[in-house]
Image (cartoon, rainbow, N blue to C red):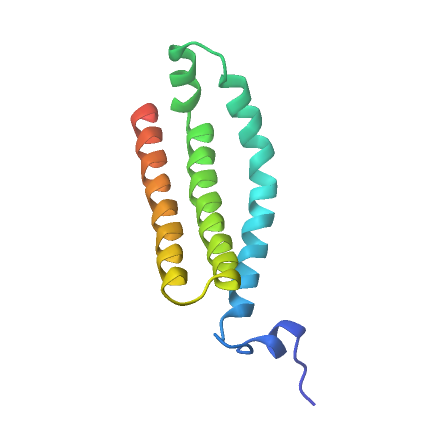
Length: 123
């Protein structure tokens, strides 16, 4: 008798054979964002409305800078995967491919610009 978890039984099922992996990634990133976002909002909210020097001082510290980078990376990757899933559900053919490439490209561009701005502030 072998013991299989529900996840192991579902792995490899479906048309693309990656549905379980995608769902698992979305679940883990959602939990990570649920933990990180309130802390990020406190840090960002305290800097909001401050002078330029105070904002630079806030995001020059390691914890706010690293947390902001993590929120950018995880949040925009979560957005890209979620947008891809939504596009796959509602579009077909060439429009699907173009929309997925646009969503993923937008996600990477926003991540790059956000990390560049953060590095410019933090360094």
